[in-house]
Structures are given as C-alpha cells and as structure tokens.
Image (cartoon, rainbow, N blue to C red):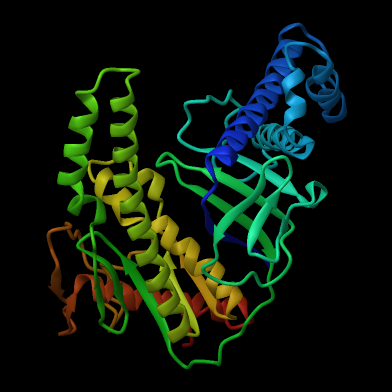
Length: 383
C-alpha cells in the first residue's frame, strides 16, 4: 500500500526564492492550460488533448518572450501541474456521466497566488534525491535541509513540496509500504462518535472531546483583531497575517496529533473496530457546524481505515440510519422518540442505559453481524 510521509523543510532564503519561482511557474502553466481548454470549448472546437496541451503551454510557450522564464524551473514541475489539471478534468467528466461515485466533482478552476497553500511535485524523472548528509536535493533549487523524524520505509516514488499559510515548508514523500500485521487480539470494539465526548467505546470507556478550536478561540480572536487593524498591503499586515496563520496551524497540529495517538491506540488494542458512517458534510451545515469541524471525525475515521489496513485489523462502518441510540443493547427493543438531551434511559426489560455506551454496544453488535454475513454466515436470525 502507498502512504505519505511528511517532513518539515527549512530552506535558505535563496532556496525560498527558487521555490517561490517554481510555485509561480507551476501555477501559470496550470492556469494557461485551463484557459486554453475553456477557450476551445467556448469556440466550439474539439477538446484539447493532453499531449497537445503540453506542447502549447510548455514547449511552445518557452520560446515566447512572455513565458521564457518557464525554463528557469524543472520541466517535471510544469508537467506535473498539467497532470493535476488533466486529473481534475477526468474526475469532473466521470462525475457528470455517473462513472464516479460520491458527490459531484466541480470543474477545474484557476489557481491564485494568494492561495493559502502552494505546492509542486517532483517525480523520479526529476532525479530528486536524499543526500548523504540528510538533505533533500531538488533540481534547480538545491539541497534543502530536512528535519527527519523517522526513516523512510522504501525509496519514494515522488515528493511534493508544500508551503502552507503559516509560511512553513514540508516535503511529502509517496512510499510503497508492506503490511505489518500485529499479533491477533481477541477484543473488538464499537465506537460512538459525539460532541460531549469525542468517542465512547463499547467497553464503557469515554474519551473526552479536547475542543482544540474552542480552547484557542481567545488567542485566535486577538490575532484576528490585530490583523484587521493593520493597513492593507503594509509589512505589519503581512506579519500579523503570518501570526494569525501560525495560531491556526498550532490548533490543526494539535488536533492531528490527538487523532493519530488515539487511532493508533485503538487499532493496536482491537482486532476489529466498528464506527458509524457519519455524514460529516451534512452535519457541518447545522448550527453545530463549528463543533463538528473542531471534532475532526472525518480525519479520525480516515486514520483508522489506513492503519487497520496496514496492521492487519478490520474496520467496519455501520449505516448512519441504524438506530444505535434508541435500541436496547440487552433485549433489542426499539424505544420511541429520544431527544438529544436524554442522556440515559430505562428499557421495559429492566436495563438502564447510558445513551452513548448503549449506542457503542449496538454499533459493535451490528458490525459483528454484518461481518459474519460478509464471511458467509446466515442472513436470517435463528428460530
């Protein structure tokens, strides 16, 4: 399986200028390619093929005085920018024709130099390398210092250099990794994700919701107010914007670290993990949007998925419409209407349930039943 390994870069001032030049050239080629295809569509001309587009916006453009500076960066960076555009078009066409599942993909749009995130990609054709001194050698940029937090498991097939809104640089390597199965575990767990508690496990454990964004709101508010007072275009405004972006980056880093540690712990302890297939995008349209985004359920479940595949565990997702909270985990009786303010309830069978723990146990039971059916078990319950 393919995974990404991210490392922090510390380019010199000269290398930062070279990277800024590469970001700008890649963005220009992407926008030129998009404009060429849009103009061909408006004029009723055939769709411009990938090869013809590369010839127009890269090969021929370099010979003109307006785009001669494209030769100052690696040609692989320009080709990869067009590859991103071609992928965006294929996804859009597959989406509108029904070949691509999920939400409809939007058509490609122009990239701006004011985007918070700038990125370029180098493949093996660019001959990037990690030097003996532990630096990342990039063509026409130089040997960039890297903060190695771990070893790469194999030779990377590509590297993406990213600059985020906080002005930090990262190298994202794509590497091929093999599965590392953990020793078999007899335990299985169901997880009920929520806002009061980030996660409630079927064994009764409750993981508190850290609320990283809520805790940092005061600091973020002060940084936003300081930014709003600065004159547009001034150096002080740039400094205030960088400070504001760093504050947000600190929140994102803390949330990511929490999700990594919790997902790793759960995967190591359990042979099978079951979660609800939550529609986070829909929940983010409600009045709880800020809290939903702060929780980061989508990223957490994505981490569970790839770590389960890597370590030989099973991850099952339960239908979001499954009545996990209202069904008695002891007898299966389905309760009536249950508002969110009801945190515990009693079943006619005599069982008293904590709402979230009961939901986690039902998720575990439903996941086990679904997995049994997938493995060839009986569909109908026994008489």
